[in-house]
Length: 85
Image (cartoon, rainbow, N blue to C red; front, side, top):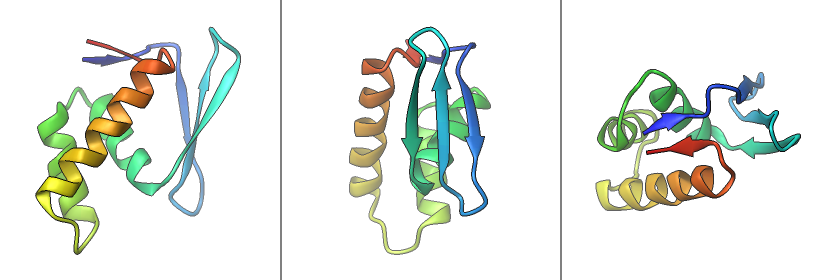
């Protein structure tokens, strides 16, 4: 799975972010977990690496919840045309 090479993510000072999709001229806002997952994917990480990163960064999250959240985010990226498998 690869991020759209034309998409640009800008991390904000508070840990949230914005992804600009130049092909559709739209922006997608990211919360802190979204930024974490985006960074893992940008470094050629996979879903398992993204789940591990969420578990490392956010205390109190179960593996099952992290897996579900990462999958929802991956689906959102695919729907927005920001990810290809």
